[in-house]
Image 1 (cartoon, rainbow, N blue to C red):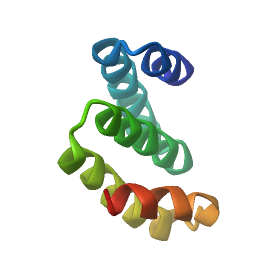
Image 2: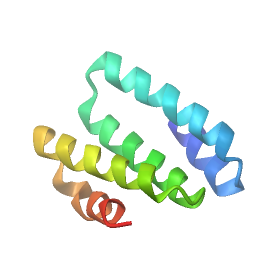
Image 3: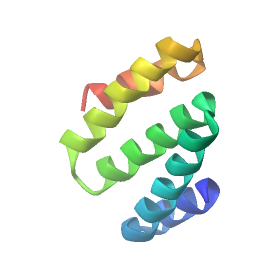
Length: 86
Protein backbone atom coordinates (compact mmCIF):
# COMPACT_ATOMS: atom_id res chain seq x y z
CA UNK A 1 0.00 0.00 0.00
CA UNK A 2 2.74 2.44 0.89
CA UNK A 3 4.65 1.97 -2.36
CA UNK A 4 1.40 2.21 -4.30
CA UNK A 5 0.58 5.49 -2.52
CA UNK A 6 3.93 6.87 -3.65
CA UNK A 7 3.26 5.73 -7.21
CA UNK A 8 -0.22 7.28 -7.30
CA UNK A 9 1.22 10.51 -5.94
CA UNK A 10 3.85 10.65 -8.70
CA UNK A 11 1.08 9.98 -11.23
CA UNK A 12 -0.96 12.85 -9.78
CA UNK A 13 -3.85 10.67 -8.58
CA UNK A 14 -3.95 12.14 -5.08
CA UNK A 15 -7.26 10.59 -4.09
CA UNK A 16 -5.91 7.06 -4.57
CA UNK A 17 -2.59 8.07 -3.02
CA UNK A 18 -4.34 9.37 0.11
CA UNK A 19 -6.48 6.23 0.33
CA UNK A 20 -3.48 3.93 0.19
CA UNK A 21 -1.45 6.07 2.61
CA UNK A 22 -4.35 6.04 5.07
CA UNK A 23 -4.52 2.26 4.85
CA UNK A 24 -0.76 2.01 5.44
CA UNK A 25 -1.12 4.38 8.44
CA UNK A 26 -3.87 2.20 9.89
CA UNK A 27 -1.77 -0.95 9.56
CA UNK A 28 1.30 0.74 11.06
CA UNK A 29 -0.78 2.05 13.96
CA UNK A 30 -2.34 -1.30 14.74
CA UNK A 31 0.98 -3.08 14.51
CA UNK A 32 2.94 -0.57 16.58
CA UNK A 33 5.31 0.08 13.67
CA UNK A 34 6.59 3.50 14.71
CA UNK A 35 9.39 3.71 12.17
CA UNK A 36 7.06 2.85 9.32
CA UNK A 37 4.54 5.36 10.67
CA UNK A 38 7.16 8.11 10.33
CA UNK A 39 7.57 7.24 6.65
CA UNK A 40 3.80 7.08 6.11
CA UNK A 41 3.31 10.50 7.71
CA UNK A 42 6.04 11.95 5.52
CA UNK A 43 4.38 10.54 2.41
CA UNK A 44 0.99 11.87 3.49
CA UNK A 45 2.59 15.27 4.02
CA UNK A 46 4.12 15.18 0.54
CA UNK A 47 0.74 14.27 -0.95
CA UNK A 48 -0.96 17.16 0.84
CA UNK A 49 1.83 19.50 -0.26
CA UNK A 50 1.39 18.40 -3.88
CA UNK A 51 -2.34 19.06 -3.52
CA UNK A 52 -1.60 22.57 -2.25
CA UNK A 53 -2.82 21.91 1.31
CA UNK A 54 0.08 23.35 3.29
CA UNK A 55 -1.81 23.25 6.59
CA UNK A 56 -2.30 19.47 6.46
CA UNK A 57 1.24 18.98 5.15
CA UNK A 58 2.61 21.02 8.06
CA UNK A 59 0.48 19.01 10.49
CA UNK A 60 1.95 15.77 9.13
CA UNK A 61 5.44 17.22 9.57
CA UNK A 62 4.74 18.15 13.19
CA UNK A 63 3.28 14.71 13.99
CA UNK A 64 6.26 13.16 12.30
CA UNK A 65 8.71 15.19 14.39
CA UNK A 66 7.02 14.02 17.58
CA UNK A 67 7.10 10.41 16.49
CA UNK A 68 10.76 10.75 15.52
CA UNK A 69 11.52 11.87 19.07
CA UNK A 70 9.58 8.90 20.47
CA UNK A 71 11.25 6.33 18.25
CA UNK A 72 14.70 7.87 17.85
CA UNK A 73 14.37 7.53 14.06
CA UNK A 74 16.39 10.68 13.36
CA UNK A 75 17.19 9.60 9.82
CA UNK A 76 14.05 11.51 8.77
CA UNK A 77 14.69 14.71 10.77
CA UNK A 78 15.38 16.93 7.77
CA UNK A 79 12.31 15.75 5.84
CA UNK A 80 10.02 16.26 8.84
CA UNK A 81 11.49 19.72 9.45
CA UNK A 82 10.98 20.66 5.81
CA UNK A 83 7.30 19.68 5.96
CA UNK A 84 6.86 21.55 9.24
CA UNK A 85 7.98 24.78 7.59
CA UNK A 86 5.67 24.73 4.58
